[in-house]
Length: 373
Image 1 (tube, helix red, strand yellow):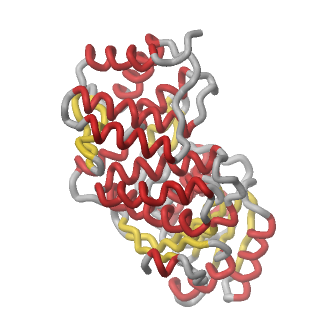
Image 2 (cartoon, helix red, strand yellow):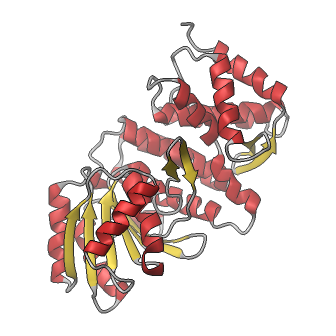
Image 3 (cartoon, helix red, strand yellow):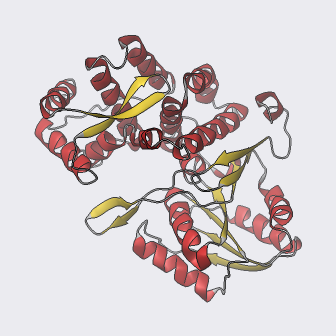
């Protein structure tokens, strides 16, 4: 379905098969589409079996009721359960598996999960393992979850080792109803989604970057149709990256991530996640420009897009030594080499070696432009 089709108000304004590492995902994005999901699932899974409808505290009661009623009407043998605090960890995955066992879910059944990024990420991990794989349909309740939970679910935590249990997306379906987000265009959840859109485009292609640039003003103004189309495009870009046959392309998903996590760890809650990710991309682009792998014009073009999308920069004092050590700790927890994902052009990101002196110099320069304590 084309972008023009998406603007005329079809029940499923956008439908896209998104490539995954080992399969593909049926993505449907629109406004007010939730009531249509059970019909689509009935068609896709054939004869209805059991269905577990699970939801977290971010799910609106009327959305859950709409799904419950329509899934039942489509012939599914339905079990409904609210998820308590589900940590994004192996413990959380075990808790979810124990719930699936108590609901007698089998590999022939369907699991529908309504929730945020963390909840859907735990569900992706658990459902991929349960009975060697049970079909998962995701219903995201935040714009960031809409973009990332399918193709790039969050890595799970271990005690003292966050984000260390990586995983590949396992969802068969993702139904993104923008009415479930409940946030304004300038709210932090939407800003996080815009940062994810920039990252996805930077890792995909110059064309993807240009299309996001052209839509930036509409996104900021809160256009529902622009949001639908750009979420679809970002999920497609992310899926293309994570499913690439080249390991070098797949590794580009680290773009901006190491700096962002390091910054959040030393900022003590003073920096929004959207700003941390935007600064992670800015920092990587400056490192790339200094090594002459990225043109200065492209560096400033990315800056301009981040600014157009309302993604600001860190405005609190950050200790240079602490940030540098946090970046090194983040990198060396995953590899024995000092490597960062750096852009070579708009739409092309690859891991590159960075020497200690250069990294320290750029961290110092970045910190020096923040307000003093």
